Image (cartoon, rainbow, N blue to C red):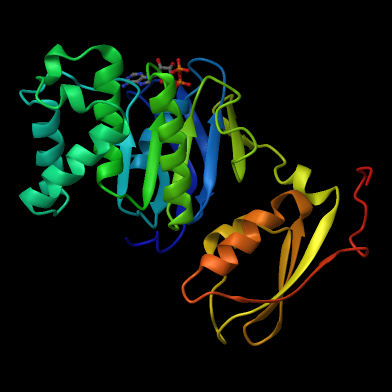
Length: 293
Ligand SMILES: Nc1ncnc2c1ncn2[C@@H]1O[C@H](COP(=O)(O)OP(=O)(O)OP(=O)(O)O)[C@@H](O)[C@H]1O
């Protein structure tokens, strides 16, 4: 499956509804990088869904530019359930729209319904599904597309515990595969600690929370690795490290928060081809940036 190729970028983006409507968003600059997870927060009615629709490409800005559009899938806050399809018929249809053969699409539809514990409703017309079950179909249609960018607007709402966990897993799979995920969720514990960036929408603007603060302090480990000259570090590694310094062609010195060293080592060793881990040692030289170590 193809990773996202380049950054999606909003430049001085503004959106208002109607000619004289108030600016819901104005002067928004935002870059979404391949392999990253981005959280968007904000009080009710501040413009989170508006921002997500712009990112998903289903709405256009009133002013400003959007560049680098990846292949995108979107789970809207409200899923249009009144379509004349069964759950599996709908997913299979969408799979073929995404270029899958009918047979492959039907198999993928079945697999996603099973992952979300919705196999029993495969043959049920969408209009007869409960809210939670139709939410599972909304999520499955987005994941089925194996998108480069996945945009989730309150996608966990209405899902049962098992399906909620499954969606968190699917998000991690997308970012590991080099895709990007942007989400809004009212539960602050949703994917806590995982986002690479968190933005708050307020007063039509976007504030970036100082992120990676927790990774800049505390104990670090230095990992020396060797890959092929010109080889790209796996996306999971780039996401987790505090710094990556190329010392020789293909030879990197990675400074990794100790809490993430397992993740980094696993990603290096399971990469194809795997990276050679030359040395792992605690870093005594990392400046203490205010945290106690
Ligand atoms: N299609 C539309 N037409 C007119 N106004 C709209 C439209 N969509 C959103 N708005 C207005 O834009 C503002 C921001 O709405 P938006 O749905 O983006 O906020 P939100 O932060 O997602 O809200 P919530 O947390 O309640 O879902 C609101 O004042 C809303 O009424």
